[in-house]
Length: 394
Image (cartoon, rainbow, N blue to C red):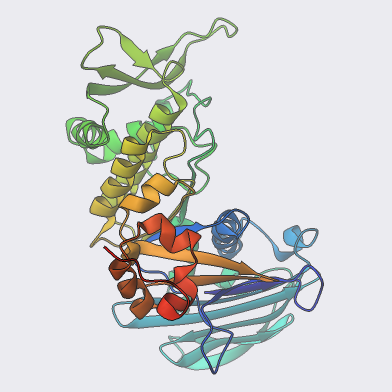
């Protein structure tokens, strides 16, 4: 991935990988599991938001013109790789209009567009056909499974991306009144989890995968992060200021005789429960997707934060899910292996990513310093390795 906005202006900002001797404009690469760390104001949340923003553009939740007020010019460059399959996608826009949009599949150009005119490959006809379209819409809106399956792959990535703002409400103040629609539609959009009702996801998951099966997964996962419960359930919440009962998440804890409902849970406990409900729904659905988790562990104590990240790594590894998490917690950083780290280093106009894929030797060398993982960030060892770092003596 590469991204740049306001290019050539005072407010220019770009996201890039670590530069080499011959090229400063490098790709940011992400593995299956990624923990994005960095000092304050380096661009962690902004990078997460850029990925989310692109997903929204690809599925039509945003038009280019919707971004014009805050992003008059932007450039996105992406490469998607999966089991030998490769898609390269480029999008540049300016003043609310598409300037350039291209897509290459396995080194074959399938889309070439400048402004509102372009050429698009039709698989069935095995030929390229010229087209015109509104200059504030992406060509991917022409997705057709028969003629343009390469557009479908990009669209599905955007549609299935999940975004969890762990430091936010995650739907703690969101409830259900009517559950009848669950019977007719088992699919759900997981993209905007801050306004999503986790109770609805629980009910849909029970219907889709079986009540006992899904509940037991949640109970076991919750135990792994230090919450001992024997039941999770949707229950009525009687809120005095409203005339009708609202349905929300409830748990029965092993050491309590009463039910703990959604309103009575601590913010950290509810965030963890909600995330596990949503994450397991995604995993069991087996739809390839990218999961963004900003401020992972916020509101949890150190042990639970660390255990939650360990659990996510355990559940995601080897699946079709890619996880990109951010954290500011130094204690969590000290316990998460550097192989999962992507360190953001801020320089004027740029956020530069250092990770195991572009700085393997430096990452491997750090284990000989005797320092803890947080020092890898605080001393900026990731930038030059032993070139400027003193070797500690035992």
